[in-house]
Image 1 (cartoon, rainbow, N blue to C red):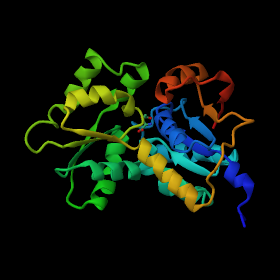
Image 2 (cartoon, rainbow, N blue to C red):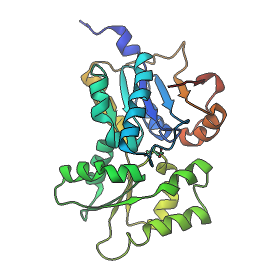
Image 3 (cartoon, helix red, strand yellow):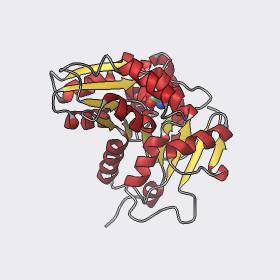
Image 4 (cartoon, helix red, strand yellow):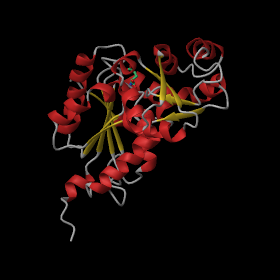
Length: 280
Ligand code: DGL
């Protein structure tokens, strides 16, 4: 007999990020889990997280998660790489009843599976690189793995500006990556360790060359959430959103910009009646 309370199963999955970038992760979650509803929070008022100290990112993350928990989510995805790198223990301590999934471990899993020569390059924000979470996650999975981390802050601005291709984006990518992807021992795998970077994938692929495999954590995070929900017996079997909207978006500033820029990350338009301004 099914003893799980229906309310938990029908509750949305909460996803948060510093802004719109996490919509690349939401998109993968929505594809992987077609029956689920989602409540997304973008902390656009305090973006970027990537240049802030760990203490600040932890404080902001606990506030973001708190708002989603208040609204009754059944699980949490920390779509922001910077927050995933530093805030998971604090989130688990603050909300013990809610399963929390970050994007770092699934991304590391995908990169270890992809590399053939044992050398992975990680591109991320300054905060993610400084925190070293990808380095630890990769080397725990494969001790001795060579990891080259490159902070690439300008890619965040390029992605938000919609300059995902063309001369300017390529020049920036060459400046960051040419020295890393040179010589016989160069990495054969590039891990996109930031929410914004999947929209730059085609351009980055050209810059590093066809011999390099590009991996991001969106799809692996979505697969990990499916396993987690199945383990909790909290996975929706049939769509729970016939009478309510499938997505609801909270943002801490700039709803118009959220909808406009967010649509490029999400891959679909964001309707204004799905958007809500919140203060944390
Ligand atoms: N969401 C951040 C990340 O994935 C990038 C943007 C920011 O710096 O806040 O690290």
